[in-house]
Length: 275
Image (cartoon, rainbow, N blue to C red; front, side, top):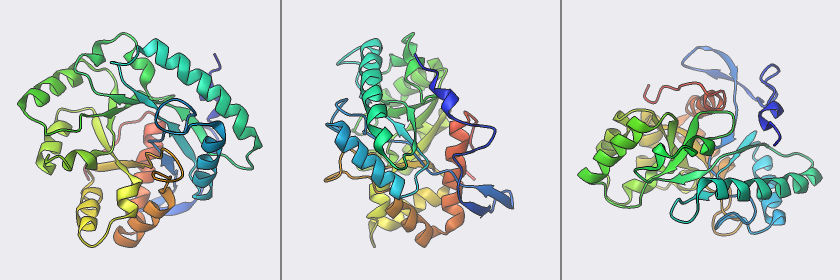
């Protein structure tokens, strides 16, 4: 198997692009735009159905100046074991690599997975193979339900047994099931976790929903963003529109913070969840 991490030039920092002033350090750093959540690998799940569709999705992200795309197909332990999933992912990735050679520009690609939460999954000896390539971070999807005591106790044990760092996928969705910001805070207080928000609700944030979305970002609860793109029709990549909305509502410094966190995660460094 190819050691794909060699593709990332940490000496020249070739993934970085735009110079910005970042308010925390009061110095000039460079932004790294990363899509941490995507379903672009062809034929893996309910996302892209073909390499042609995958390429068109990547072209849209490239047009939005996204530097790196983390490929995160769904993993459900109830459907297959980790070994089987990784074999399918490798095959799909190889097909995609051949297809993107025709692209004029393509974001850097890193393998990962959107791992559905099971209380005992962190004790699986192969669990570490589901992390984002080159890091110890794993993208974790929680159940779409109201969280009660049994969930909190089970999740706390999961975190205690887990050696990996956790990125909680599309955190805003769990609040749609009646979970409060305080209850999300309880999950975060168990440790090891930061939050990812989807670009679509940011891009579509209106008069009523916008305040809630922007409050979560500004509070520091949201550490990174991802498109969660599945196709070009009903769930297209909207990274650029989310970027513009964040900058227009909260300013460039807030978007710079998300980009800085993105860089830290890809460097496998810890990040500060709350300012």
